[in-house]
Structure formats: C-alpha cells, structure tokens
Image (cartoon, rainbow, N blue to C red):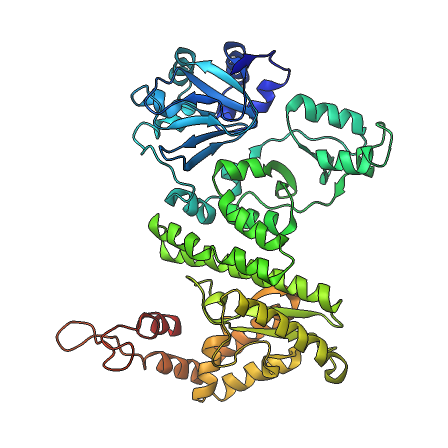
Length: 519
C-alpha cells in the first residue's frame, strides 16, 4: 500500500545534490517539490508491472526501488536521489519491466504531465532522459557502459557539486541540524584555508552520543581531521578502490586546495559500480584464506560478464588485476596481523601480467620484496621469509599458482634489500646476456602493490635513466624482442603447434602476447 505524508523541509536542497536534478534552477526545484506527492511503499509493494501504464515519475528519497525481469532477476536498483518511470513514459507509456520496492521506501511522485512539462521547459534536464527513448529494456548490473565508466569517467562527472560545509567552530548540534535539513549523511568541515575535516552521522553517533558529550561540543573536536581526498580528474575506479580498501563511505573532492564536491556510496551506486565494490569489500573484510578463496571464485563470472558486455580488453585487464591487487594487500595485512609489525620497512611488488595490469583470469605468481637497507639477514630473514610464504600460499589457495620459474618473494633471491636490487639492475644493464635480458623483460614491469613505495621510486628512476643511456643494452633488448616470429604459415594461415597435448592449437600467450610485451 502507498500513503501520503507531509513534505519535509529541505527536500529541494536534497534533490539539488543529485544528478540530473542539479541541472534545474532553484525555482524549478521548488516547483518540483510543490507539484509532487510524498508516497511510501512497504517492501515488496509493486509500483507497476511490465506492460502496465506508467503514470508517475517516482524519485526515491529513502529505501530503494528494484527493477525485476520476468523471472525475478534484479536488473537495476534505484537508490535515494534517483528517479524511475521516465523510460516507460518516454517510450510507449508502459512499464518495460516490473518495478517493486526493495525496502521500506519513501518517494516523491510527480504526475506524468508535470514531469513532461519539466522536460519541455528545461533542455539540459531533458537531455539526461533522451537516451532512454531508444535504449534496451534490460540494463544489467555489468553493462558495458557501467564497466567502461570505472576506467574512463572522472569523479567530477558523478560527484555532488558545491557541497554544503560547516566551520570547525560550529557546534555538533548545529551540524546535526544542518545534516537533517539537507538530508545528507556527512558534512565537509572547512575554514578560510580550505578543507580541514569531515563529519559524518557515524562520527556523531560514536564520538558524541556514545561518549555522552555535550551537543555544544565544537565540530573540530569530533570530526575526522585531514580526511582522504581526491581531485575531480581522478577516475571513478580510483575512488572505488580507495573507499573499499579504507572502509569509507564519503570522499571529499578537492581541486587545488578548494573543496569542489563530495563523493558518496550513493554516487557510486548511481553508476552501478557497486558490484565491483562488493567484491573488493568482501576481500577487505575476510579474515581467513578460505573466505578469500570463496570470494575470488567469483572472478571468472565477473570476467565473463565484462567480456560479454563488450568491454575493451585492456580495460578488462585493469579491472581483473585490481582484484588480484586487493587480494594481495589483504593477505599482507593478515600476514602482519599474524607475525606482528615488520622489523624494517618493506615493499611488495608485482611483475609480469599483474605488474602490467593485464590479467584476464588466474595466472601464476610473479612478485618480489624490496627491503629497507636497514635489513639484517640474521635478525630479520625469518620474519620476511614467513611473510612471503604466507602471502604466496594464500595466493595459490585462491587460484594464483606458484611461479614455475620461482620468480616469487619466497625465493631469497627476490627478497633482498634495496642496495642489492640496485646491483641487480646495474648488472643486467651493464652485461645484457640472455639471462639478463629475460630478467630485465620481467623486472622492468615491476609495480608497487603494498608497503613503502619510496623504496621503489628512486630505484625506478635510476634504472630507467641508466637504460636510456646504454645503447648496447637497448640494442640487445630490441634483438631479443625480434626473436619471436609471427605465427604465420607459408599459406597465409596460422602456424599451429605440431605435436603434444596442444597439437593443432595456437599458443596465444607465447605467439601473441609475449612478442608485443617484449617490444
């Protein structure tokens, strides 16, 4: 059943923080609120069935509205700040799929005629909905544009712009009242110099109410000081990983020191990126390797959905590799929890396909450890050997099998202090014999995964500069890359494997990927 309740204050401000309603001028938002009706739905209540007339544009204020296929599959979820019904009204007037309340839901319902009048009056607002006229009914959770948006969309495209903020001297009571009136769950805290903190409803609950502090407590005493922030040109994917790994739900967006927006999980849900966040979130919450293996077992399904949606290959590689990165970081966290703090700074790096962000599924491990030069073998070797073994065993248990060439941090050769790594790279460049060429081709793909990144920055800079100056080394590397002949036969077909278990097949890695990588 639906019911009508009074329209609360601040609804226009709430809508102004959500796209595409932020495209409407204040007077239009006031008219939208006045022309709508607040309705409530119980979980499971039906808004409309597939094929039934759609007579209202419904904006979710609290709860969620789910779009379901004929067999009950979840096709889409509309969260607070999103509206449903435009697709049906702009096409043939009927519901393209079944729409039901996914939870106890409060919404603002606009009559069809009123909604269409808004579209006719405000072209920018109308443009947002034009794409719905010709799109297919079904929009899967892993649609191609969804996955692409993770790589190509910038935070400036989806953030809530010009967020309301509060001064650090304001009282908690004033801040809480402002959050209530605006229908928001966080407040950036800023002074004349810029962003200094972030206050969330969780902060008020845990740091004020639970401690019995006065409502007159200054915000500065309970806020999260110097919160993590990203620039507006950062990718949605970057924010997704950061928020998942740090367990944060709000992220300030700062441009040259100025607060320009706020990103919340609602923004990410709007882009339907939450499926990736769930996967990485599950990794970051796991406390046992068995649980990690269960989570990682979903990677092939994730990969198949990306490929099926037509996502470009290099983007697939970046997305899949990000899961391996998250798994590796989690294993390192679990290792330190088991072994205690490391005796000296360290850096875990990946090479090979993970280092290049080219993974398309489970592969062998290629990793190493750079240790601070304060490392002393007799005192510290046992700790780092155990750490490497724990992580490597965990990766293997999750499907990333041990490297046949033993190019892993479990091998003492690839678990050495920075000074030794410098010797390695200098030697490979100075004497580029076949083994040095092979190792260079692998180790030049090194990418930091977790730990003290400063251990790598100087090494990378020095190595690239030395390689740039050594023409003999470059010539050997070029010659090495040209040893791979294209897999073509005399008759313009592919030259296939002639014998063995893979007879009459083409090795795509050896004959396709390796030559390109070496070049």
